[in-house]
Length: 193
Image (tube, rainbow, N blue to C red; front, side, top):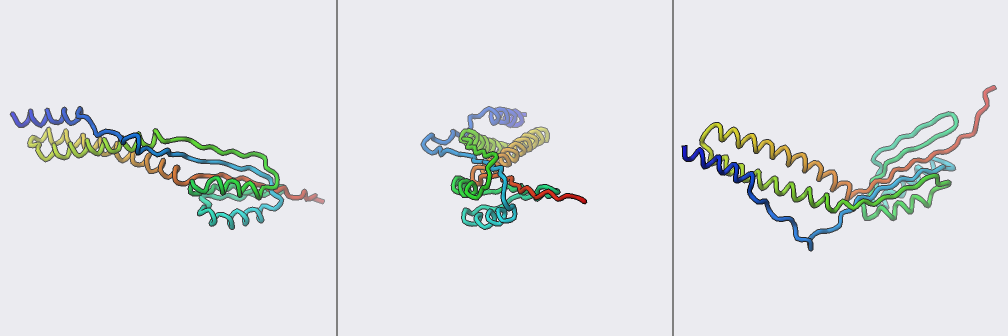
């Protein structure tokens, strides 16, 4: 009975134990997410489309999604371009340089430093908690203690996986910026006789 109480006390202590300290402020580096869009009229969408495709490798950029639409009076492209964040401003300026008639432009920089380091710290803390549970599991002898600890490990593991997914997405948004391009060409009106 004594061992049983010790394990239960350790479970409570594990859940209440202080977690590792956050990173010192001197190690914190600003994390930014850059995104933008351009909407413009083109004199020749196929030529502009090819110009865009030709310039992307110079910026280590690529087209993530593309859609072409054609109607009787208009042909248009919608492109989602991904570019390393360090090249975002240069590519954005180069794209503006091919525009015939700009109708809308948008550029945004979001500081996600707090969110980035908060997620990083929470993941590290949850992993430390998981490690403590695993050590407790090796000491547990009673079935009910083993089941309780395994349930706790499963909950912590689920939290870690969810936060790691969020962290991976955020890290990708920081390292790869997004530019959405929409451009169209007005086609001559054709009379039906």
